[in-house]
Amino acid sequence: MSMYDIITVIIVVLLTSITVLFCSYFMAEYTSTLAGVTDNTAALLAATQTSEVLYTFNFWSPFLLIALFAAILVSAWFVQTHPIFLLVSGVLLVLFIIYSGYMVNIFNEVAGHDSFAGIIGNYDIMIAMWQNMPRLVLIVGAAIMILLYARHRRDSNVPIQN
Image 1 (cartoon, rainbow, N blue to C red):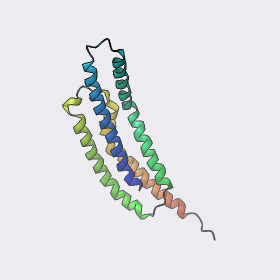
Image 2: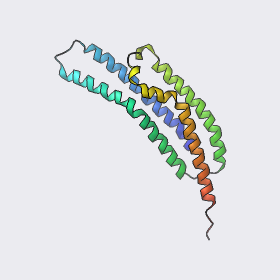
Image 3: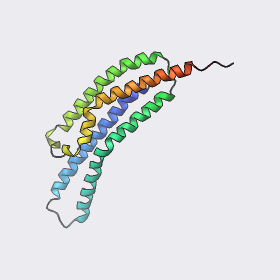
Image 4: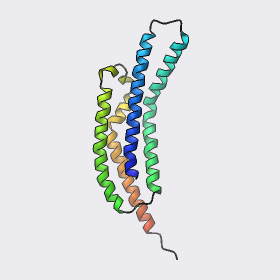
């Protein structure tokens, strides 16, 4: 099941990234409507702090991805599998790389919309992460395959006790 978890991570990170872009867009629109307002300090403070929180996602998005991939690797180590899943994982890995390429295209389509032109520059790390998503899937998928093989080799060297 560890290989299927890769799809889950890609979808979670994609939905989170798109949600942050939409929230940033709405906050940019809200902040522009507050441009002439000077007497409502609570609204100005809320707009400033919300924008700052959304921009911190740019910094934390790679850590979210690394944490989710690390959880997949740990689960791949502790789950008992048959050695045939090494071959199945290889086939699935190719399909998941293609799938992640489609997800990158979806993210680029959403992020490239004219509405996001003013805010997309604030999310350079997130964009770089998405540009390299197929490579990341390849690295994590290869690590899962190595763990599956290493786990089987380790378990097969244990002597049988009666």
